[in-house]
Amino acid sequence: MTDILTLIPLPELLAFLAAGIVLNLTPGADVMFATASGLQGGPRAGAVAGLGVGLGGFFHVTLAVLGVSALLAAHPSALVALKWAGAAYLAYLAVKSWRAGDAAPRQGEGRAARALWRGFVTNALNPKVALFVLAFLPQFTDPARGPVWQQILILGLVFTLTGTAITSGYGLVAGLAGQALGRRMGALNKVAAVLFGALAVRLVWE
Image (cartoon, rainbow, N blue to C red; front, side, top):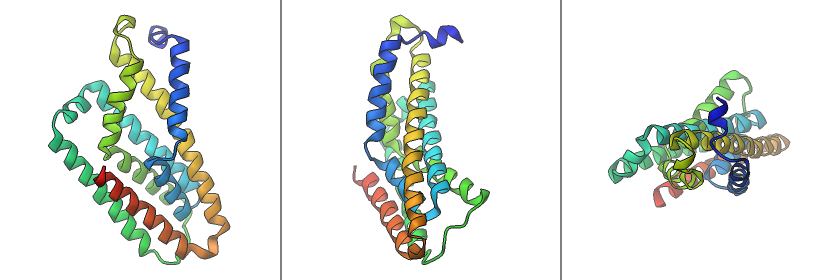
């Protein structure tokens, strides 16, 4: 285990950590999803949605380590199919949120589990995440230091942990704001629907 942790020199690991935090702080699709989840389901749902997004991101890291992501990248039709599947799922969430009306968010394990699953699926079906992992992480690896797959695994874990914390934070804050406006759940559900729909369009357009 010690050998694995010393594969990446501390200065380079810190540089990677700083770059990752800057990227994660920049609002993107993951932040939009956690925000929409928080507005609709409350602070717990928003935070757990961020955790689901993080798990989806680490899923792509695992695929990269196994070489599956490279195979997907070499077959554009597979990426297109993945993209449309992700967009369809987001569109489904948008329609469901729009039809929710003034229903207040229900608390409990079921709600949290649903938010976790939605976050995971949304990120796992996003081909942009797979391509990002393939383009970003290898820049901080060096074959002279040891197995590249181990370095990608370490970097991916670090990036996932920081990204999950930040994304969950966005979802938590959005959920707290949603609770403060609890009497306007109809409007909040509509806002969440628009965000989910925008993510679907963005995924297809890009």
